Amino acid sequence: MSDLNNDPAAAAAARQQPVNPDQLRLWARLVADGEAEFPPDLPPDQEQSLLYEVRRLRRARLITFIARQIALDIHRERRTEEDDLC
Image (spheres, rainbow, N blue to C red):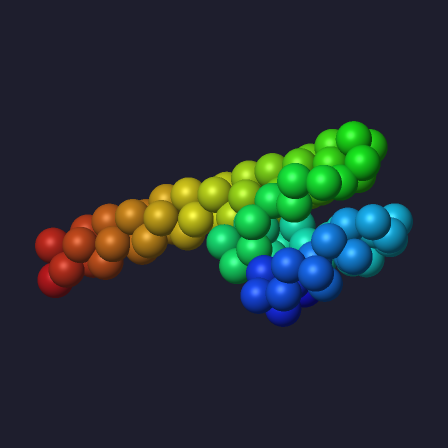
């Protein structure tokens, strides 16, 4: 799919064909990663599906990031408390 950004003819041909669910998930991952732009010529139902999947991926990444930061803060607090006890 990343080759589609470099080849406009291939990108146009790909948009004319229906996108299967696996392709849609791959495209969503590429868009969420910033490796591909959101395709402008998808049928409305596939556009909504792609948009939903990109949002889901980004939301999951944000939640994971926040959870890791909280865990890191807790770990630092415990380590500081243990150092204070010694």
